[in-house]
Length: 492
Image (cartoon, rainbow, N blue to C red; front, side, top):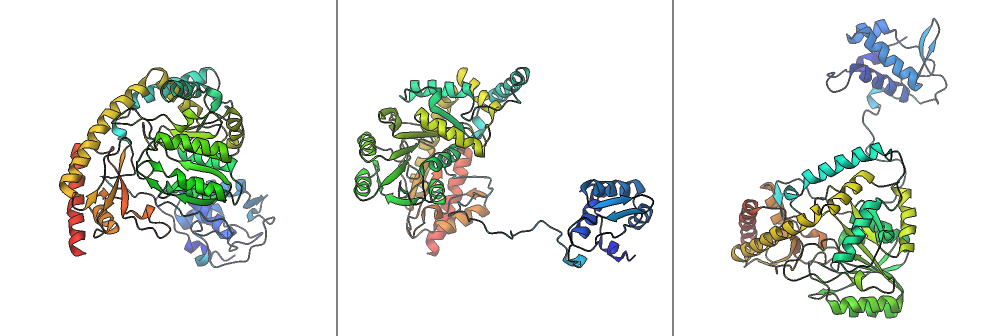
């Protein structure tokens, strides 16, 4: 028997992977690529031990793994052989054998629609509008989670399949909070928990859409939601945005010509421009929904942060016709890492979405959801929101003052009434992409504006999140930004 192939096997440091597993993988690869054929006799464990300079028991352990997996069979008094029941494999040279997981698939598949570019790792920066995770009440959450986990184990509920709608405790607490602070006369039956707003948007759209349905969004809009709707076969119709939010007259013009399945609106702080939808337009939206039979998906992603006056109540709070599906999450309260969101809608719709949700997510995260429920019960969430809103208002004011004093000749933005980001327009002689690349070299994230330059639209604008940076970081960020903007402007 020619054992020349053994010279191609190179064993690595055992710290990376146990030697017996390296041997198992090497021989598995030889068989899978037809170099070792059906009924080929394996070298003896003594020979392999001497060849590789390893203990004989290491070789035996590797061979036992291959026998257990079915690659090899043991024949009494004869030794180990390649299983003759494996499909015939056309031999390839060892050098052409696949040593890494394939980088491309051999099968066809649907490609993602307009993928969103993820932010690269930077020290700090002007993000899309994230909270400062350093001030979140993690100690309280950890305590609540530990307590919930212990209680769950004692009640033997960890092995049970939870309802598709999520934790009863958190749904009841959310319903109570919505009744008290957002004017929604709901119960837990109107609430479904999810892993964040994006999952909520997908679940809702999936239950509403048929391929070719018309969906109305704003221009510009929340691009990730648009991508979701497109991936489900929707035809997107765009309406404009002004200082009072979505231009409802343009929506009405579409309604007179086409059948609209639903509209998507970020009512409290429009994404990306941060403007608030006026009360007149909210009421008109509800009237049009009743008249033309479309649904309203209201994404209220940062309702809790309002700095000037009391925020307008959600569109859903005025709904008497069952037209609004209200979506929110805790990402802006604690952190993007905690994926807990919710859908609020008429109970019959919630029931059907719950059924569908179990096809893609069996039961959610019962322990985390219950822990969040406890934080609502003991007012931890309420107290944190109050403190965070005060801090973020200070950071908003400080950021706006610095932008005006240091970059007023190049950048224009109005202080948002609420939320965690500015909508900034830059002078046309400034290249957002160049600035973004230059800032990245210095560890500062600054958006390149390409997110809103789809469909040949050149807005030269971007969202500048301010909440996640403290005073020292903010001054450092403005200094870097000022330097790079001036360099870019001069060159142009």
